[in-house]
Image (cartoon, rainbow, N blue to C red):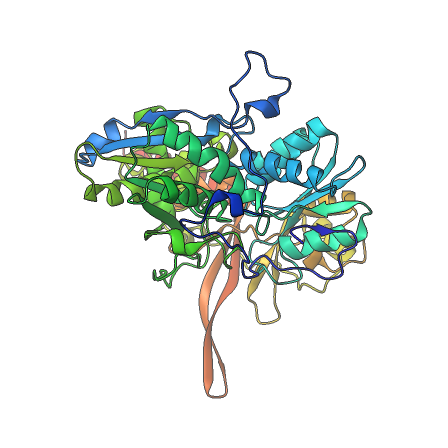
Length: 525
């Protein structure tokens, strides 16, 4: 079955081999699926779900000129969907299919593991259709997505970002566990559900063909679940066989077949594209060329799209456009490249839109400008002379940690393994949130309330970069690399050597200012 329900006996992982029989040249009459026809838009919509789709196509002008492209460069602006992303299309389509299959009925509970945008699409449709909706998403996903989901009435469950898709802690495994516990629960499963690519085969691709009058030479798309790229590619290849399909995949993801990952990258900030498994609905045979993208290039291009083209798009839109300006160099005057921009900037206001967030991660360099204004900007963290921090083991109870925080007058502590390796951070706020959600009790191990979202610095990190980090977080953990030897083997471990807060930095700055002031006074200035 394409669905997982409360009655399902075992989890079906999202990388199960596809049984889809689609083939280029095969008549549509042999399709086992329902296909929908696009309808003209009414002057007044019965509800907001009727506004899903029919997104605008616009010329990219300044960026095209900057990169010296000869072809027409067009952007399909999916952030004009009512929920703000291309995923509104599949959220609605999967719900409609499940209703027609008799899987969704009054009283059903929709559960979905997602990076956020599919969850928003499902939560929006659930709000209108009257379903209870539970969204399971990794901690990496933005706070804005969580706030939008809650506003739409969805319930949120967070999972560790580092958890492999097939581990017990992953958003996929946790969603299945909830589905087994909650009567009338259904996982629509965007990774396996044919309604995902069908939404793009029937509608997104048809819109592109119509908007370009059938004259398309290249379509550039990011790959996540693979629904967009598979659905669009199948229809476009049927109608315009010579059209090249270009896929975009971040370093650290394994979706791009035949492309080499940067071995230094095992985490990426861009949301909504890339996975550590190949989803069932992704048909990689349709992709003519893959491009790997990195965070810095993606976010800088997204900011460029906003600043130079007025398109309020998200980070993965930057990934697609960064690849497009390279891929489209092969096209000539009169040819057309379409780039799909999946979502908008609303979900990332505190992320790549923030200069401080960009500086903290090294994507934006403001050293020259800021060091001329602040004497301390280029000083290293080691000048703060921090004391050795308290740290707790993962087996310590929540009650014990609360007592320890009270006696030490601190609100956050590092959680470390017995060898000193950093696991994460725990804060009073974290413990409170988990207690309110009934995810832990006083005797639970603190590992159950530990967050992986840790801001790390070294002794050589500049105070300027530290100040950017502390504008986004309550504290930063100072780490150092340590060689640990056991017999004939040695391993490098990252251990905690300090904890730095805004108070530590402010004390250093004000004391330095006082010293400078006294020195000037003594010299008669």
